[in-house]
Length: 270
Image 1: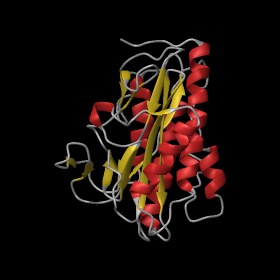
Image 2: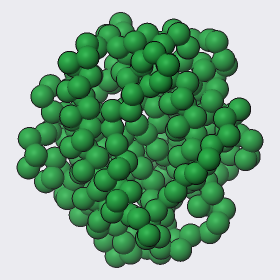
Image 3: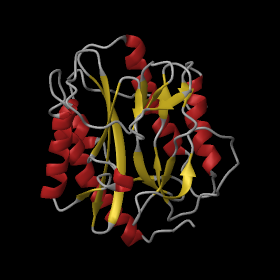
Image 4: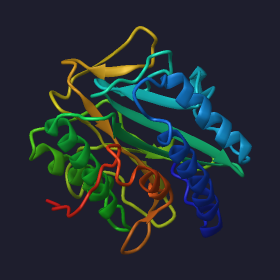
């Protein structure tokens, strides 16, 4: 069942999204070679709890941490660990916050120091594809319009979209209906209605779309071990233009004029 939210409920999700955005920024301040991913998780959980929130992911289906931290060929759901980041890595930070009974969810991928132009382009174009999807998240369109916008943008550069993992609805529950694939056909799928809240989250591989799950039962990586990027916003369906409920503002203030910055300029939407 798809639960439509009132304006008051959407505002509560947006407030949660502000705490989430600031938690992301606290993590971004500490991303550098030599830091462990477990330390980044500690920073996020501490900030969220100090600001009245609950880490949405911790304990969700027994997930052990506040952050999903995915490095290089890990697509999503990586565990924080004693792994020390090094020059040339990329790292996806996925986080959720429950505040006042409502969840928000967003993700951002960072380069660590100098990375190849090929991989930087992957990050830029994956981030662009998120906004391509958001542009189609309006009343009267369909879920397939979002997926088509993401897929057509990244595939024209030769990238692959992960099929097995998708975006989702959210609100009082972290994962609600409908599913929001990053691929699809225009005009197909669930019709979008004002009051729906969904997480749009392109997961895009530099190589082939195939993925494998590690023995921990959570970590997903690319089968060919090429890098993967992941960006995510929670958005409310509106008439004419989607309302973005999470924010990258605080991340971008922290990363401005640093190697962590992934700047997106004009986007050509197919």
